[in-house]
Amino acid sequence: MTALPQDFVSMMRSLLGDEAEAFFGSLDTTAPVSVRRNPNKLGIGSTVMDLPSNTLVPWCPLGTYLVERPSFTHDPVFHAGGYYVQEASSMFLWQLHPLLGAAPIRALDLCASPGGKSTLLTNILPEGSVLVSNEVIHHRANILAENMTKWGYPAGIVSEADPDKLKSVGELFDFILVDAPCSGEGMFRKDDAARTEWSLQNVELCVRRQQRILSAAWEMLQPGGLLVYSTCTFNTQENEDNLAFLLDTFDATPVALDVPTEWQIAPQLKGDAPAYRFFPHKVKGEGFFFCVVRKAGEPHTPKPLKSKGKKPAEKEIPHGIKCFVHHPERYEWRWMSDDYVHALTPDVHDLAERLRSAGVRMHTAGITVGMQKGKDLVPAPALALSLEMDDHSFSDIEFSRDEALTYLARQSVTTMPDLPLGFVLATFRRRPLGFLKNLGTRANNLYPQDWRIRHLESAEDCTAAIN
Ligand SMILES: C[S@@+](CC[C@H](N)C(=O)[O-])C[C@H]1O[C@@H](n2cnc3c(N)ncnc32)[C@H](O)[C@@H]1O
Image (tube, rainbow, N blue to C red; front, top):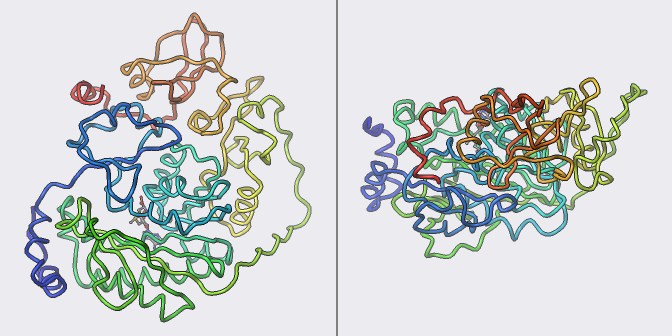
């Protein structure tokens, strides 16, 4: 590993005093491996969850440490959205649970890709809540959309916008997470490049960017709403100083969390406002900073969207497609620009309309259900992964692990003489992976090209590990 930058070493010595050497030592150790279960798709005890695990992550009941790092790519349950590979400190977000209440809310994850925290949020948001997961960088927004789709949350939107553009939607959200792009000192253990790219000038640049993002977030937060600010860096400029920026600039009050001392999470290094710090010499996880503030005031109902003249006539929704989801009556049914029919709860629909009016690009919204191709109603790949798919609409085929991997690599799969012709759901351990079209003499693999496993040949190395 490249040596730690000298300015970083001096800075951390003055921040940590006696603990500094233990901290530097921890940056030369191997990072722990942890995964977080999708409770809607995975009970305890399957595939990767069968691997030797030493402990649960203390602050998140869905998180488990693994003793070694298997090839997750070659576990079909990973592709089915059964779990997310996430370093443990980030799972601290779970601790927001008691603050979010029971009534449905509108939540925004402003810097969301690849989706670790957004996937976790779907498991702590009150039932009926909408989550907008936003990412400004195009290729990262694609990855986010893929991960969110696989997680299966039916009331999500994935958008791609700079926070300064997104903010024109106004005070819409009851909860906003800003997991900010940062100087990444927390990555010094895993990533050599993080060490070489670090500089004090870059820290300053990050601070300016973070304050711009926080200011935009503030304009989108409802009065009375909660904002979480987090980074994976250690310096105080990007952390406590930005918390102070929030408290000094806006009408914000800090919010404390109940954190048992045995978790070894350190308090803020500067000022009185409570913040939570994860140091790798104290916790089994990466470097992480976390704080919560509340905006003053009472929430208001956002003004209805102004209608922009007469809408073009909507194309008719094919009748049979509504049977593909549970409770079709709960949704507004719309054709969207991806040529798929989407099912949107009224709240998702309202938010999607507001984003559209603000000129924000959306990658997904609600449940992507299917499209009409000639006489066929073609189910969307995303439908197979949605928690709201009504699987009675399809015959299914249960794959062995090798067959599932072949399917996920988008290679040709076995013919299915015993199954009816048409669209068939492919499953592994009863978890849907995607669709095939059974043509009798052959079957078309409908797994999305962009999601396919690209290096199937190395799968054998890890068969023993994940069976
Ligand atoms: C720390 S990462 C987010 C990780 C994510 N929350 C998760 O848990 O998987 C920060 C994200 O901010 C995005 N980003 C970079 N520049 C940005 C900007 N100017 N405004 C908003 N987001 C930005 C990055 O592309 C990156 O995806």
